[in-house]
Image (cartoon, rainbow, N blue to C red; front, side):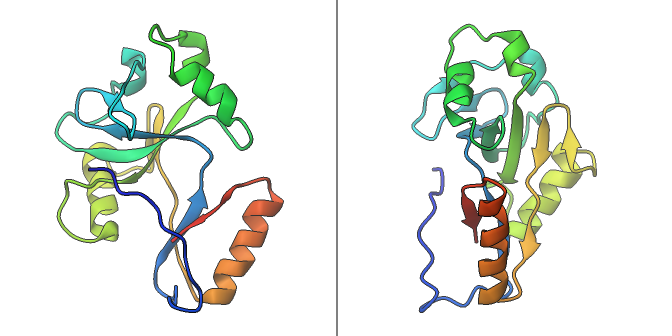
Length: 157
């Protein structure tokens, strides 16, 4: 089952110590060791070379991403049953979790980095999504202002 985001209520939840990352304007994609799937269970017809570096023995959760403000173009590329190879070369699979690994998010991302990415932050067309430890509410507010000022959608805690 794919986890979905919930809204943050600053009056109820102190974000200090939580991991924080930019919310990407991409298409959710779940890797199950042989194919990419949408969060609603539809197969994504990615070219073989796009997924060839992904692990066969580890589930990954992430998003296909083309760039800020390019969601509609991304959807046009990724929803084709016969992939346009040239267009797919513009996409990245941004990984933000390895849900089959036991432990918290830090342990899961460390395992993904070690086992799926060979100790690096990226491999082929996939990369780990950068995470920052939140220092408090003002850190969230400052980071949100920066991300939105750069044309981003928001933050994930």
